[in-house]
Length: 500
Ligand SMILES: Nc1ncnc2c1ncn2[C@@H]1O[C@H](COP(=O)(O)OP(=O)(O)O)[C@@H](O)[C@H]1O
Ligand SMILES: O=C(CO)[C@@H](O)[C@H](O)COP(=O)(O)O
Image (cartoon, rainbow, N blue to C red; front, side, top):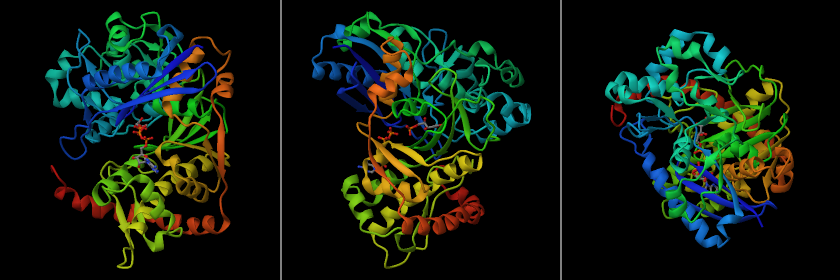
């Protein structure tokens, strides 16, 4: 039997899966690493930790799988998007990586808007948002000139990991699209964007397709992990693109909901001129010449984890789901907005913070858990609504991520989105998409669709329940008013926040 390995370099952990040519997930292994949060709005990681934990994870996978290393034909990657890894001339990081959920770059976003105006949306297809890579580059230029002076190039998290495993430095189109430096339509680094901001185009690394082979493992890495230097390494893609590949979202009309640390609603596109006026992200897919539109809830699973860590630390997620199930839709009049780390879609606002509205002395922890899950799902529904307003039909949504582990949450998604929600047979998230890119890159399948037909099965289906759907439609109207009603209150609370 032949195998491939998919590596997903996530925000909280790295996950590896070993998948056979038949699409069977034979083994998986994962290892965690910490976030470094020096002050409110800051989020960094040590790239060395990604490399260390990935090597240990691969070693563990190989030991437990007990398959001959020569049977592993290819490896590919998925990675948390947008994180800035600045490298010096010896390709060593000049500082820690600044991640996608770091929101320190508001001033740099305004500078990008002032210098590029309408040209930004025309070229990069996206507005200047704090999470994207370009404002992070400008922040280092402005605030840490010594680091910036030493930098000769930059990459994204999984590109750095791949570099350390192979010695080859590249960035694939699906991840490059999230930097705000790519001309998304023509798949070239934009000289206009670089020139307008005074950045040397030489900072941008070579571009490559997600299924392209970049080379082989370095001898030292092969020795440490138990793999072979013959194993081919393929570029891989952005985690949301890989999540879509791993869920079979490969043609227009197919929609994904992913509830991980962040949450996304993603819909595949083949028209590179699709125009959402920057209200949704628009990126290159990991499938050649395909694209996707995407709305992002910054703190989706993160809001539930925040609640659990602070108010239910000794209870499992499963126990919390049981509590949520005991409460009717609407959480007995308790409403939550999941802005605990700011928001992206539809409110690109790094300063807004969350609220519980309607707290009553009769409410219990169960109401709070349900309200948190409903608030996260309402936020995702704002993206569904934007896509429908843009002319998309969304009648079926494939749901993945931690949020798809729970029946009660899957049913809630169906009721709130007013669409059928489908769960996958074996859900491995973006790691499966990475494994599929390796399988396609190895030439096992003529098309990615053929690979998806072999590797992916759909299992349970959740239909909207009329009574809950109607109740949620009324609550969603109220939910949508909370942002506007709390914006100025949050602005006044800003000076009181930690680290201000
Ligand atoms: N059993 C569960 N039921 C519902 N939600 C869960 C469960 N387990 C984890 N989650 C949620 O999923 C999130 C993690 O999802 P995951 O896809 O693993 O995230 P990431 O890949 O971003 O690290 C957690 O923050 C939590 O809110
Ligand atoms: O910023 C985005 C997408 O634009 C995030 O989706 C990151 O790509 C991280 O994802 P998770 O760790 O939540 O999977």
